[in-house]
Length: 157
Image (tube, rainbow, N blue to C red; front, side):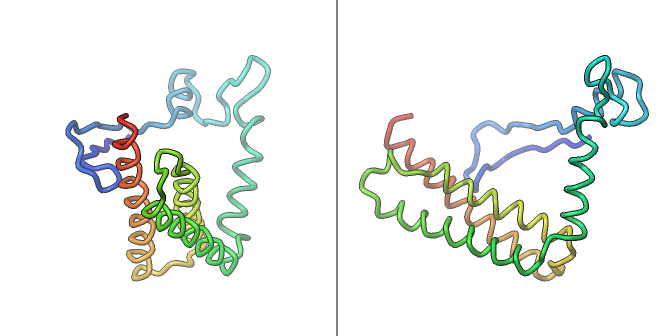
């Protein structure tokens, strides 16, 4: 179980501090169904959770921990980081801010975050590098959050 209190979101101070309680749905279902393994949870009367999700878990684990190509992941990280930076740069000059595609910009930030996690799982990020890469992703996220606040102030939302 994890409690997280958000005093900021995207580098923006929040007036109200929301809290998040993280407890996996699978763990709750296993508890409620009195199962020792999430793979034994009843998905339907004839189908177990493991029947539905085990293959996904196996294949993504093999990819993330054993087979993901580190050079390719870094290239993808650079491409998505570059595209997010490009879009944020365009936003500053864009005359029709309410129409600007900030959600696709945020998608590129999320892809950077996911690629960071995969690189980390592959052991491709040193302890020293880790701080810098996290800062790069955070800078993009803050940029999108600031642009989002600006965009929605313009439309009066």
